Image 1 (cartoon, rainbow, N blue to C red):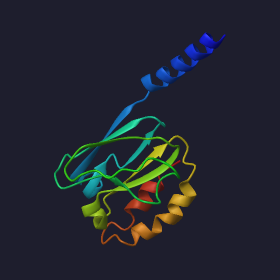
Image 2 (image 1 turned 135 degrees about the vertical axis):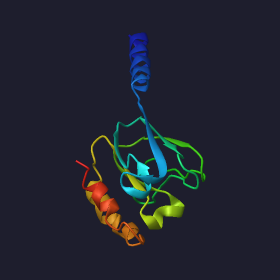
Image 3 (image 1 turned 90 degrees about the vertical axis):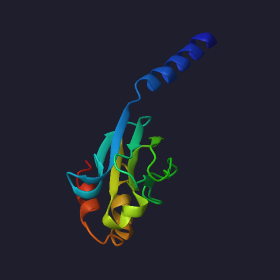
Length: 147
């Protein structure tokens, strides 16, 4: 009986890894939403999926915004002009930015599973949006797409 339980656990763990998907987000100087954007800017993923941030144009990075991710979730801070891959580990909404272009509202949203922390994110993101010199409504527009 113990061997069957162990086998079941091993198969469950390996099968969930086999179904994990990879997503690519490009860091761009110009995109469909204007200057200094991530594309796609809003993505839906499953917990366990990996998001690959690709520097399509140089002088960008991707980093999670402190306080704008699910409690206890993975955080990241990519190097300038370098690819970074992040495996999403908790359900909820994640906000990330390009540090040098945050003032231009170069931000993005990841929704992992259900957006369990959406109300908190909307409330807490107001501090970030006050730092934007342009595109002041960009993050709110992105958050309005979260269902």
